Image 1: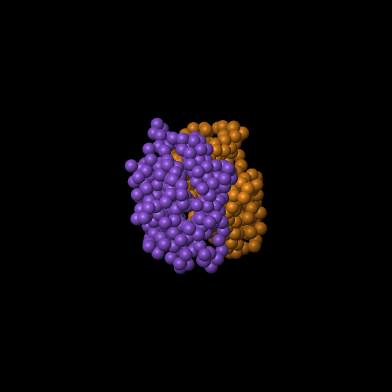
Image 2 (image 1 turned 120 degrees about the horizontal axis):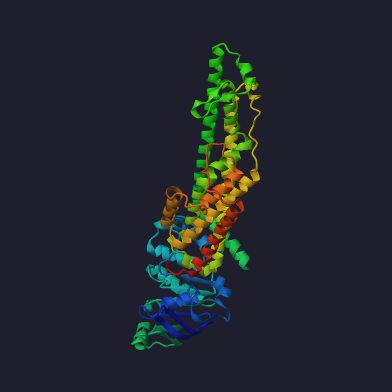
Length: 225
Length: 318
């Protein structure tokens, strides 16, 4: 479980959020959403220790530094080395060494992820979707304990989206997944926990139940407005 | 994984990046090419000096002089500057040829290479190399990924270690290839020289302080590598630091006695004799100890400031 206690963050004089208290359950999929500027990205930066903050964030009662090796993140802009091949990116942008990536990870690399011949070519020749798939492969192959997905579904084709959804469900058995974004329809069927951020604070909705014909966007509308 | 293991693992990956992206190869090829240019220049000079000796020898021989006796006689030079008169030009040309050819011997080729590379080319090559290593994660925005994989200090340490290792490899390979090429060129030049003449070449240049010269050159290389690294981290890109470095190295004159270039020159003139093709400018006097201490401070400060700058920067979507 990730425990956020009295978390506050401001940039110069602008308060982003104030005294946030959240509990992100272990081995569940948590979706964090909110209007633009509500602090979703800032919360992600704090969770990943990329920004200073006041308050406390504990990963299973440990500081981030203790669990750093078990944390992986997929960013919306898919940062990768464009001058290198897909395989070389997989090797360099993790703390692991992979041998026979495709053969040894059939369970993780779903049919619509990148094929070996594509992984052998340079990333500068990849489409936006292929870059996103490579970013996802990078984190999925390492089987992290905590997985952060920042608008991870953007740019993926229909088949890859279906693959990812089923894979996230499978991974959540022993991975705590935190997805951030606005893609409600996509996450509706797989999330366990919803956090809505707005107006310097956050609402955590556990075990929510959707009425027939209702989607996450309806809950969003209800809570945010 | 312990902190040391993380650093070693990441250093290995930094080196792999340099390998995959060919940065280390490009750096090595440039360094070796520039060094070989010097060796080729030394060979040309040796060949032309020997040719001049042969022509002088034949000229005086045709004029009926006992040139072999002249070769055993000392040289007397009278007059000063352009008015100098040499009474034994055959012996003079022989000694000039001997000196030029001896610059290609194993004994002096390393010193010659160090003199040629240490004061202009190694600083430039290693500063630019470090700027690229420092800035490539900003260019590809992969800092945000690496900052989650490891602590900022581990990231900087692994980059610095990979740079130092890269500098050492390029340095050693450059010296070694120059040495091999020098030996080949030396053999080529002396293969056309009569044994009897070769016996007169026994005034070989015996280098002094070779170990000190190598260590000092390595120190200069590491100082500029660390300055380049700091600039790459500070500016988060390669272009501006490279331009700044070119301006500092080639356009701005030495800014006084405490300019790094002057301090290096102070120590260099104590260690090197500059008998080859490269002549280093005469420095404004500063004591060697002061120069050395300031250079070490510059080196340490560049590394410290790299850590400090990186810690202060945002690592998200840079």
